[in-house]
Image (cartoon, rainbow, N blue to C red; front, side, top):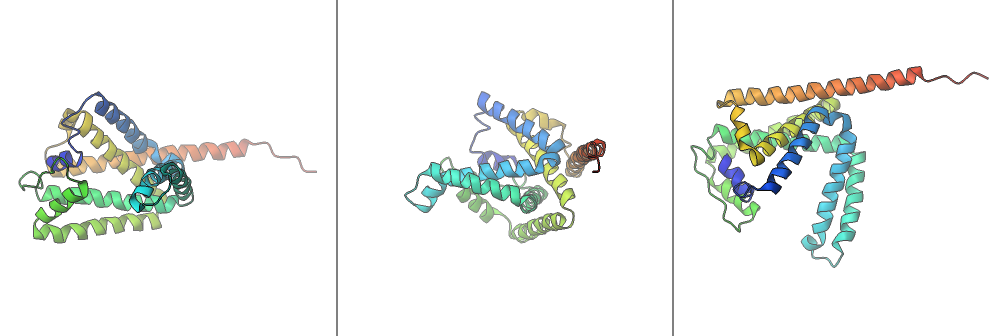
Length: 246
């Protein structure tokens, strides 16, 4: 999978410099925060993510739709709309994001199981080729059997994420932030300090076990932190003085 990730990154890893290392450090810090404490700040995180996504979409919306509007005006509107959506629809945002993240990891697992990028040759991205064009070429190069299995596996993983969010919202939140944090930590290590990945077990079953263990540890840390926070809030309300009866 390494050649595919290099191509999707647009060659940034081959040109790694101080700015790439600084960005990798920031991503690692964010990943660690989400991994161990994301569940405690879920509402704030989804709100900020909505603001960021709305701003990014608003900046490019006039160009995408070819409308004569200021991109900064649409960015402000997008930021307000995205932040409001993230604040009011935290459950929907977490559910959709968890479904997408589980589908992504399932696609990676299927690719590794088929030897994608190792035993199986894959097309390389040209310097000026768009990412969507490269992904289309990559899809066309996949074996027919893998093309049948991949959508089904990703769809089942996404459905499991949505079902978990509907049935156990808090557990789904812990899982999402823990898995997202671990993902960001791995990406930061791959981009800034590839030698750190040498500690990852070489055999795939052990890699899966290590990933699941890290995610479970993050979920446990978040649950513990949220429990302590709720206990402190309850104790504070219990100690609050009661108004005298008239």
